[in-house]
Image: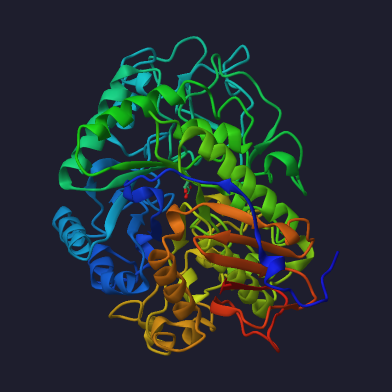
Length: 587
Ligand code: NOJ
């Protein structure tokens, strides 16, 4: 039913609690964590690429916004074939981003301001420039050096077919063959596995040396004082025994699926198509790794945490990563990929809370990151329900910017009203859209090249941030250079254009984060508003004495006269919540 009569206070009564967490002091349970993508956050030295001194200089922006922690994407030594997710040295900073001293300064500055720091760990693969891979290339087949990676002989009489039929997530085969050498066996040069780019060879997690090395890397950063790790491709390190052939489709971000994912709805278990079913993902063996890492973190004071980046569905499979002796949080990609649909959102929220409650872990909420089209652009693609994730090219249908921003703000206010931990991707607090018309010449994402341009890739969501509207490079750094061009609209959306401006996206985030903290929303229980629990248009719930109400339908929802509106994602019209708007109410 689409509601036209005004709501009464009675209509807003809470139903039975669907989530009622026990009190717990661990900071990560309700933290709002801001993702810094270092190359695009702020440039300190003027080379057009963001760096750690740039992050340090902007810590007050983050403090002012009201987040609790910062997760930084990789800044390690790397040839940057996949923007740093190809690590050549896990214990050093790439000169592009600064030095270890710059890191220490950034960490100290964050801690002084009460901000925790989470760093990115990339254990599924290293760079091909890593000393281990260089040693493996120099060593003979069957050697200890080769055993740190997944080298295999090829198939066919001359070994010239890949060892299995797996495809790289970035497109093309997941195997690359070495150049011929004199000591090659009868099957010729070996092949190595890379689930991502050929410059990112997969490590062999059956090898104890790999385990020892990564525990040591954890300790290196824990000793420096980091508060946690975001674990890249946490579902990928262990592969099914024998590396069996698999005919599913490996795709960027939605993961691997058996069928093309046009609308892979499985509403009852909260699945949205974000999962992976292939033999390269979500194998039981990964959990033993996280148990051992959990033990390493326990040696340190201060509730250090592990966050899983695991594109796994259904949510009950994801919950296995955050059992009490494993990781602490996992990104909720089922929420990120849910369409703008009231029933689907209610389901994914309920199932997320239920399944994480069952293992005693907090639920996380996330709408954007450096791998997906920003939600301000995604939600502007009304005709496909805002589900497009893999980048938008100039030749694609372009998002409706106004609709996208309106829905993005509504989605954010809904997200920040949910109990648990929330992730904010740099620039979403400014309402930034993707650059949706980047020319091919400036694109850098390997998925663009490995698919011959069929996948636009992720560059559009990685554009350098605008700090000072109208300044060269919109104030990204002292030279005005930016490693990717910014779209024209970034001048109006720059941070300085929004600070202190009533109704700006920045001020909406700031107000919501302040209320979230004051009302202790992150650690509260949740109960649906009973009278609206079947509505096709409205998502409404009680949390910590606040009613969060999102209107996704076309008909305005009139509020009871005595309602106190705490924050709104858009202006109310005659006391009613218009289409694509979320409000927080005190009733
Ligand atoms: C997930 C990261 O978020 C993404 O940016 C990267 O390309 C892949 N893992 C490979 O490391």
